Length: 403
Image 1: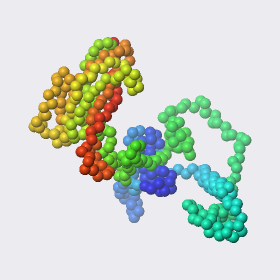
Image 2 (image 1 turned 45 degrees about the horizontal axis):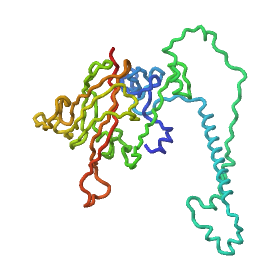
Image 3 (image 1 turned 90 degrees about the vertical axis):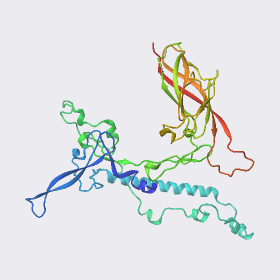
Image 4 (image 1 turned 120 degrees about the vertical axis):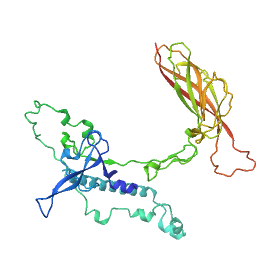
């Protein structure tokens, strides 16, 4: 909904409610009840009735005595706050006070910017029309008449100050001796979620309107392209352009981890997945000494020395079992398996610490081709798509070290 309508509804939905017990969304349940016919009270008929229920903590609107409704949406009974009139009057008073302070600030700004040239001098040399050139925003004549409306002085809101109470109502005699049933007492979070009532007992918990959710639009910090924009349909949120990193950087995953022991070399199986439709060349490199990114590594890693070639992504090939695999002449000591755009590789890990988690770090260098449509037309001198080599820092957590 528009922001103006959301502000009018206090940023809450009129039809959706949150459970006062566990804060999950309430659902509307239907049941059949028997009612008497108005023409013949002796006869009864079945009628549908709707109530609110929580599917997690089993709280229902019937627990607090809320009447069932004949329609599924809207019209639910809401408790009245006895201090509503007082709070509304305070809000109106402070809004009027803020308006007065704003007018006073505008008058002070006008006094600092006023023209000190005598009016007769400016009219004598014909400068009056030049000084009255239009400016952005309000004109000087408009600012000079800044004031409250004529009727606002008569409608000035006056509030009565709060009166301190000398005597406080004493506690019941059995307050300290009465056994406490924790299931009937509200928690601190439940009370803070309803600050206008501060319910003490669970029987005083009423459903509250659900907060509206904001859909943000994301932009790239460098080129200011829209990455995602809010849509009216919540299920249609998707990336607007194909310049997202997850669509181009090869995905690294851990497939199998052996038993890792201190100062013993183990072989870990990783998988590389190509997210693009063309061949991608990948080279794994060990981190150099003094690398600022290599701060969490607790093990020595040996990566494949050869360049790895990942086949392009083909959605149809995933379901075609008869498709002929491409011949990449893989080394079995490095490549464990190859399937479509996924390849399994071996790396050797040697833990360097006697206890704690085993973490390895290395660099992944791969080529990148920007296949998105360019903003400006390609000139004749440009030769196809430029290949860029990118380097990513990879950090893998392999779990705890065995004794």
